[in-house]
Amino acid sequence: MLRYLTAGESHGRGLVVIVEGLPAGLPVTVEEVQGELARRRLGYGRGPRMRFEADEVTLLGGIRHGRTLGSPVAIEIANTEWPKWEQEMSPAPGRTEKPLTQPRPGHADLAGMQKYGFDDARDVLERASARETAARVAAGACAKALLARLGVSVLSHVVQMGPARSESEGRPTPADLEAVDNSPVRCFDADAEERMVSEVKAAAKVGDSLGGVVEVLGYGVPVGLGSHVHWDRKLDALLAQALMSIQAVKAVEIGEGVSVAGLRGSEAHDAISWDPDAGAYSRETARAGGIEGGMSTGGLLVARAAMKPLATLNRPVLKTVDVRTKEETVSFKERTDVTAVPAMGVVAETMVSLVLAGEALRKFGGDSLAETIRNHDAYVAGLRDQHGPGA
Image 1 (cartoon, rainbow, N blue to C red):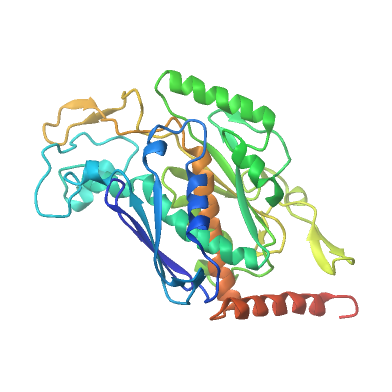
Image 2 (cartoon, rainbow, N blue to C red):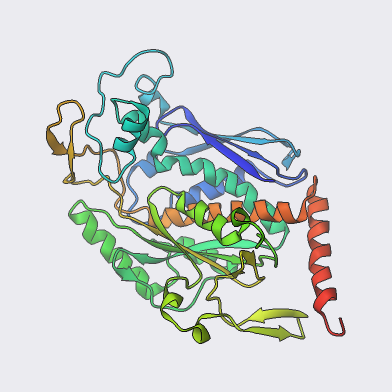
C-alpha cells in the first residue's frame, strides 16, 4: 500500500514529504527528484518567484546508495527564501505585526479563518498555497520511478488556455515529452500554442489571470488496476479525487466523459478487438479513458483536469471585506502568476502516477522491486495464457 504525507508552508523553512510502501531496491536519486521539480516551474506566464524559489532537495531517509530500503522515504525541499521570512513565519511564540485581514475571493482564506478561528489569513494561505504541490511532485518522482520499471509512462500536455483550445486529435507519446516541455505553454499542438501564448500576453497586459485544461496520458497501464467490487477502489474514482485535490482544479474528466453524455450508446463506447499478433485485446478508441467498471482496460489512460483562473491578480479588483473593520475593500496581492496551467500539468502527472503506483503495488505486491516486477510479469504472461489462441 502506497501512502504519502506532506508538511510545510509556502514561506516556511521548507516542505517535507514522507512516502511509505515503496519496495526495496528502487533506484531514486536527488537528480531525478530535482528534474521533476524543475519541470513544475515550467510555463509561459509564471511570475518571478519561479526564479527565487529554488528547490534544494535532501533525501532524509529511506534511501541508501541510491536505492530505497523498503522503509519510509523522507524528502525535504528547503525554502531558499527562508531568511526573509524567518521572523514572519517563526514557529516560536509571538504575533505578527502585519496581519492579513482582507481575505481573497477564490482562495481558502475566509473559509479557513472561520473554520479554525484565525484572525490572520496567512495562517490559512501558507498551507493552502500551491507551493505544497512541490512536495507532491517529489513523491511523484518516486512513483514514476516505480511505474517505469513496470513499463508504464505518464505525461501531460495543455489542451486549453483561457479560450484558446487545441482542436488537434494528436496526442503526445512518451517519446514526445521533451518536445512538450520545450513548448512555452507545454502544448503539443503548435497552432494552439501560438494562440495560447497570445492569450497569456493579453491577460498579463491588464493584470488578469487565465485558467485552462491539461490532459494526462498513461501508456502501458496493465489491465486490472482498480476494482469494480467497492466504491472506494474504482480507479476512475481514485483518479478523480487525486486530480481534484490539486489547488485551483475545479473539474475532472475521464476519457470523453463530457462529450459522450450527449451521444447515443451506439456511438459512445470503445469496441473490443482481438490482436492475434500481440495476443491481446485492443480498442481503437479511448472514449472511456482506458477505464471500464472502475478497472484499467490495458488501453491508453486519459484524464483531464480543468484549472480555474488564479484568484490572486496583479491588478487587485476582487471585492472583499476586512474581517476586523467589516469595511468593503479589495483583496490583497501576494506574488502571483498570470497562469499556472502548464505547471499544473506536471502536478497532474504526479497525482495520476501516485494513484497508478499505489494500485500497482496493491495488485502485484512485493517487498522488493525484483519481487514486484516478477509478480507483474507473471500476471501479464498469465493474461496471454488465459485468453490466447486455443485457451
